[in-house]
Image (cartoon, rainbow, N blue to C red; front, side):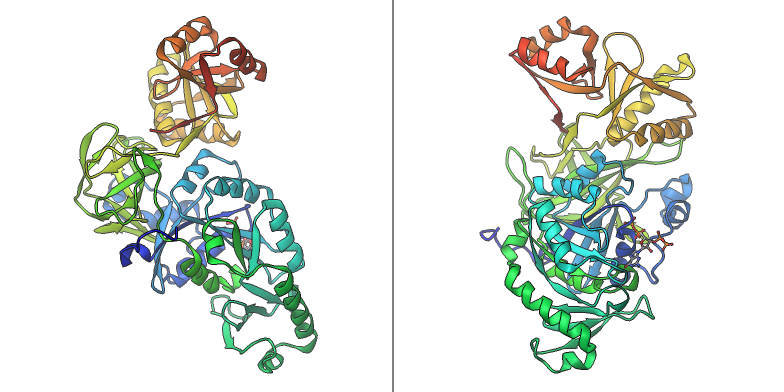
Length: 530
Ligand code: G4P
């Protein structure tokens, strides 16, 4: 990182990140406040209008108006001070999905939001592990400090122990629960005092000069001040000081304390993301990596969202720009098909609304409406045959057989399932033996979502039924070895939606048997989307 060349200013000011948290920790509220301070919305309360209301609001583009489709705010851009923030939304439901994982391949950092009373919860831990795989820098926001919360040292200890990351306080809370009155900004030697009366008001900042400044006593009641001074002394002794390099390599997380609903601590966090968060990073790709400062444009699709309109099959592919300066109307090469695509209607998501993106820079996320040519994992370049790597597809953890209520509609069902497979919403396997499809997902809720979408978007009632199989593995090896293996294990073999050979398993025993009996093929639980 230290040896990287200086980036052009437009790229250097970009911060592309996601929020990871357990449901209810305050992600939506925090997002709303980000947008408020980013000038993207006039009043807090707009992001909360989830579902229908949100759709109505984003029914803004002509395409949406004409066709009644909508795409929820999957990426939001806004400016804060000299920075351009691109916030990529991670799916909200608690089922951990591939979608979430892939979202995290498109960002350079994550903001981890925890509830001050609950600490590190299960979903946060899972998402953190994913960030860890990529050494993503993490900035932590401990929310809901206006309510009874845990002891500050206890929270920090829990993060250090459960997540094995150094924690450095960027601020320190003064008072807890009802007595919580604000924080001391360690990085800038300032007192930040919360206004409980006005939830959208920015906190009052008081510059002080060191912890023995008499100004402290003017603002902080004696009993709180005494405890605070004791704690901060201990913190300085026991906890590491902020080291920018360690934050950037993901081994240290700075923590801010605040209350999103009271707009408290949010600006400091935003400032922290700007100051300590990473610039757009080098993207791993084959046969060479892509650096953000390269003049030529390259980007990759990390998410595809289909519309909700049965009459039109348009989708929006979300492209993360890995390099260059994109301008509307540019012709880019779709590396997988080697075809040129003119990108005439790219969309930029500016919080409440979206706009045609006249231009975009490395780090930005643009939406590209298309008819299904663009798939997750696809790379677009100005001609060079580069393929972004590291966007995996996971073996599903739950499998069910899927049949159309009307057997004559099997072809329709196949089409519907293929669409969801391309969107990354499910794995679809066509067994070589017998009829029907096996659908694989990571969380049980996804079967219900799929069934209702197939019915709604394709007018096709479907049944999901128990399957004898419990998991699937991709089969790798020389072509003839794979063919020989497939012929000998027909009952277990299926093709995925890309035509790749898959081994359906019932028990771990099936996998062990293959490992033992077929040394020239390997089974893997992930495959790279290319
Ligand atoms: P999520 O997206 O992470 O699931 O969380 P969300 O922002 O929806 O917040 C979950 C609940 O926590 C909401 O209450 C929200 O108002 C509350 N909350 C968020 N930040 C704070 C905070 O700093 N302090 C306190 N005390 N509460 C906070 P709710 O009752 O579920 O919804 P609502 O009725 O407030 O809309």
